[in-house]
Length: 489
Image (cartoon, rainbow, N blue to C red; front, side, top):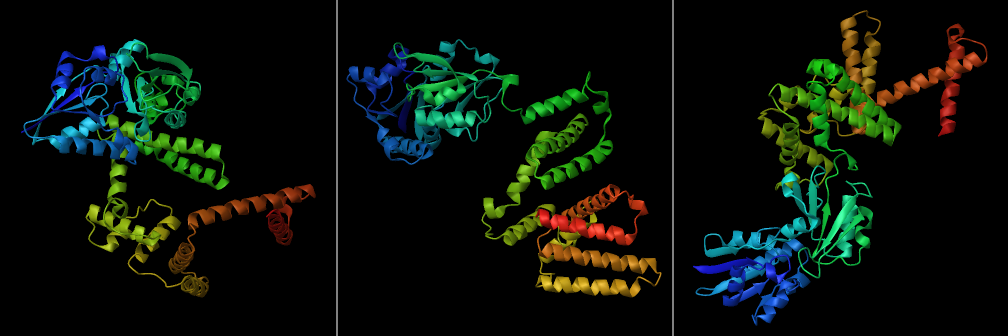
């Protein structure tokens, strides 16, 4: 079987090399270094040891993922029968070393692999800063901050801060989470005598440091309450405290049923903030709505039913499964195509055999204008729909005539039925025009109130109360209110 020995070169001081590592370097049939940009390489040269490096891959590969993949592939191809290949990497082979991870994975089962440990750059940073990792430490690849987030409650080491350009990118991402003046430690060549440099700076100065290079990392101490933003975990913990011993009596007494009015109220307040286009109010109202979700999750957790993680996991899985046109092999290039794909996935996952069941499953608790819209929308997915909005408008005219025919019959049941048909037809027109009827009616109600207010206030200015006006007088002021609105536009 082919033999591969992967050794660590330590954090940079050749004195940190283990005796085993030096022995393997000297006896290697083939020696490949991931990079010669490491202080220990000069010592290897001084021993008269021949080697090749993978620095050429760094110059040609388009991404770091591609770089590490190509390096691991080169190592695999360089392994030979009856020859020992040594692959040497900076630091510890198993600490923040993607090329080793890929190489070990590719070599499983057909290559004998031996790992020779070394002092990692993490060890050197902890020693230089005199930090005990037992109190919590998170290590994050600075190039992966989009996917890995720092933990405010513990220390964070950010690696791969190898240039001022990268430092600038990392700074901007960290400033989305931390205050601009958060104190950080910038560490270069930790553990390397004569090269080690550690300075404390505010975060906003990270990319102003001119000595940043490939041996540079950043350490961010725990900040706790000093973080720029609060996290979901903090909100969940706060709700648990409010519901716990010594918490709020009102919060402890709430149930799912008692919270229903608040959930509905907060939803409408979010809609109101959207209508007003008030961003600060929208942030506040979304927070109130989010609180309701966390509140219900805490109640369920106490009952041993589910918690906030189940909610988040459920919606993430649902989004992936219901978007096969994004995460699978289904093709959908239009909005309607995406909607059909969503509905098909939903029926499959829920085991729904008929299209009728999709209509039945629309919650009855929805406002009826909204429920009508959704019923028509789902029916349209199978082609049960008018060809043109003009046909939908003609249906409104037809239903209005039927109301006229029955309104003076005194048969309340028939009148109610025809009024319902008329409203349903109007909703259909709204759907064709991509107008949410619930929101349209909400706007009309608000408009009515404002015009009514104009009638009353204008009447009072002329010394006449609204309840003493004639319908003609009120109608005249109503038309004035409409004119004023037009002029304001």
